Length: 184
Image (cartoon, rainbow, N blue to C red; front, side, top):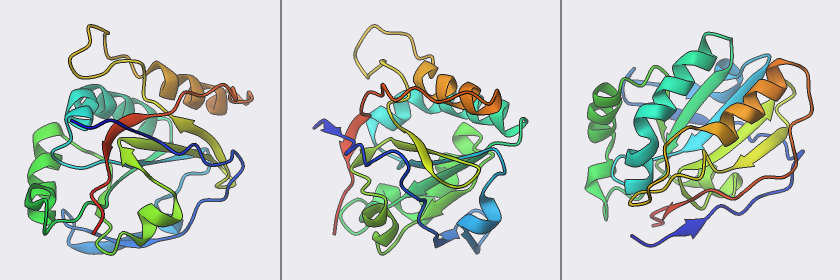
């Protein structure tokens, strides 16, 4: 399990629009139709990464809670499915059902979207404000597989609460860590 850190692109970066396939709905979806007027979370995830599997239950719980507050969550899988068939669209459907994803889980077959966002690992979390400007990029929390730290999602929820209550998101942000994106 090789650890890769997120690249921590500059705060204020504009979200890149995309049109990606949603294997669950069997249709393409784009950022403009999925974004929120409060905040939009784009997370690069996959089916097999132990770091993603580790946070999945709590991530889904937090996504469900904040989606009720009109915040959008989008999961994107950009892994090379020829080398990692467990990340195929068919397996994305299985994973989404297994963990109860109520957010779009999109497939970035060309890996163009991951490159545009400078995504480096799974999970790689990006929070954009209502203007689709980056206000948070970093870890879900300090928990990691094999460590004895409870999964809380506190780093992400602190950023989301700041947006909900009209406060500035702290610029003190810790990089996410996970498996590297499996590039072609």
